[in-house]
Image (cartoon, rainbow, N blue to C red; front, side, top):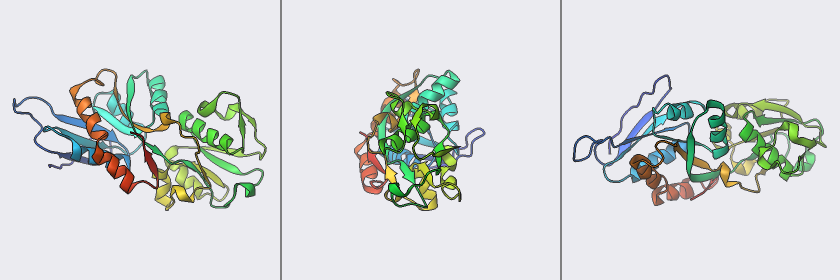
Length: 270
């Protein structure tokens, strides 16, 4: 196994080279390095475990970025071969906004998402006028609103499901006030004195010491479109590199890692 530091252009990057064998095959010329961009744990850890499971002299190289934009930009610009950091609706929004052609391949895990409150331990205690922090990107906002509707706290227009926006709220009996926050900053919103209900993922809420078991309520109905997925491009999705990567990412080694190390925060999706 060989390890090294990877430096990405304009990206705060910690790289890991991990594989069995060299970066060339016996014929001496084939590129056998598969670059995968990711943002934070546990996604980055999954890529590292997949790197240990890869076969036949291939190398999986982690390119770690520090926000929720660069991993898609790197993939779209062909600077990496794939990324592992997002769900399909988020990727589709990027495609729409950037006229990109990214493709969601294997669903790897479903994160246990929900709402957290530092002020209340029972839904019945949530008062009128509570300020609720939601993610400011459309795909995650829709999911958050669907969870509130699932709990009977708001009503959405018929048929919008997880695609709803604030404009689709037809009933707001508790007169919630809405605060739209970047997904990476929602954990900080939890600490704000005037915010009593915050949507979040286990990955981001962990930085303030919370787990899904601490949530006031979690998502009940899992929509697999929100599974954190391996993403490639239309032009390389059938390449040998991606076939090798898909096999490693859905290996028994990765599944065992998810089940043993992260069962409190996620559910494997393969």
